Image (cartoon, rainbow, N blue to C red; front, top):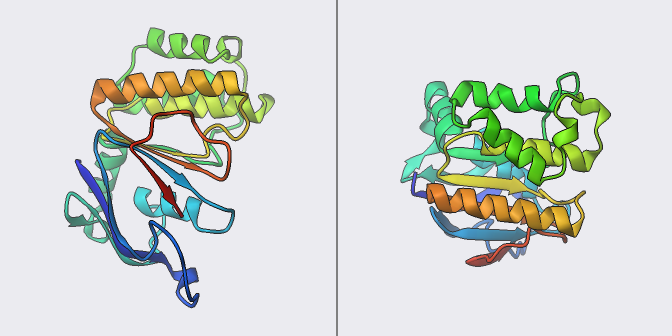
Amino acid sequence: MDTIELQQTLPEVFAGRDGIVSDVWHRQMAFQKGKMYLIEAASGTGKSSLCSFIYGYRTDYQGIITFDGENVRKLTVKQWTDIRKRSLGMLFQELRLFGELTAWENVQLKNGLTGFCRKQQVKDWFEQLGIADKWDVKAARMSYGQQQRVAFVRMLCQPADFFFLDEPVSHLDDGNGQIMARILKEEAARQGAGVIVTSIGKHLPLEYDRVLSL
């Protein structure tokens, strides 16, 4: 996948609003593979909705979203499965970890499907992110910031044309944010992937090609 394009896309709940000012909503714009984008947003402007639209979890929007020119509304369940497995890595704001599973078990759920990363690579990322001691700890017993780092590693355990991260550093200190940014930059460069990050204030410190206002 080389291009994600939005054509006059707008959440249906916004349809009755006048004077929407946005670089994304109700415009024609595209995300290109290999580029880095920051989407700055205020609460209630549809940031998490955008993530769900692009990932195919929700379809309650007007307009068109395309992957390399193909309308995503026409994708089959199998096509969506392949895209989520091979092309689109997503870190949701709410993380979607299983609290009863350990950090490693949560990561292995993804890596077992893709077979993308060696176990030692995952351990190295845990070490760099300061959560090596949480390997066998259940997610429910971890802080939110620790869970964010686990979910981040899980996202990396797949091939990707785009990485989409929704407020990935909201509960991290600057040091861990810098480490996450470095790992993401390295992995995106290795795969030639695009990076799309959302923020309502604190954002992942990367050299963005474009900063958009939602």
